[in-house]
Image (cartoon, rainbow, N blue to C red):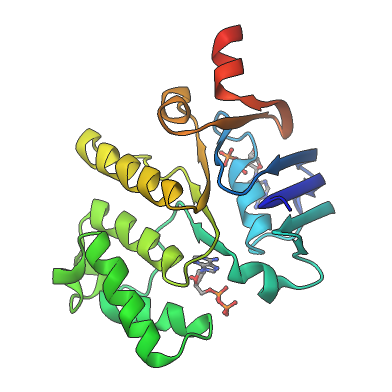
Length: 226
Ligand code: ADP
Ligand code: ADP
């Protein structure tokens, strides 16, 4: 079964704008997949629908075979999403953010604390566990969002423009981290508007433009044809 399957997904916003014109795509278990497209193409809309922050107008989305309309809690167990915008409670402590997120996913308290520690350490945030999230630097906030998306150990991790506005050093270390967790078996989808980023990390790619998928192929095939 595919990690992610999207069929004929359509989104018309309240003002009548058609942001997605019936897109279909499939991402296999273990893949490192790029959804590449310019600003305004429909990438964030697609991710918003997958994590059910945005309603869809038509079509279907399944995560590991679970249709998000039929069983969103079931789909969500296998899904971690890193949004583009920092959306924490600014006053909550870094450690508490992770423990509480694990709690949302039904992890028992002791396991939640264990997972929080594991991911804070892996992302270099353990020393900041008692700081309110507003005290973190931009790069640390970004890493905290990744830790939060991973704390329930989802099989599919989706990141919306993870390296936008991140300096080169931070970008490299984020790339290394994502490669490592992909090698350990987590399926990854990221959106980007840099072909270079897709090329450095991903095996397969869909290119989205004006709400349509215009390519859905391997990076190798795409580069051969460019
Ligand atoms: P991307 O993430 O690829 O930059 P988005 O999915 O954010 O693209 O946006 C796709 C299109 O939908 C853009 O033209 C954007 O202006 C439009 N759009 C996004 N959100 C809304 C909204 N809430 N209402 C109307 N149009 C929107
Ligand atoms: P619940 O559905 O359990 O009430 P929410 O959807 O309100 O949880 O999510 C709580 C916070 O976590 C929100 O800020 C939301 O943006 C974020 N979030 C939701 N789903 C995910 C996910 N799959 N991965 C990471 N963060 C998520």
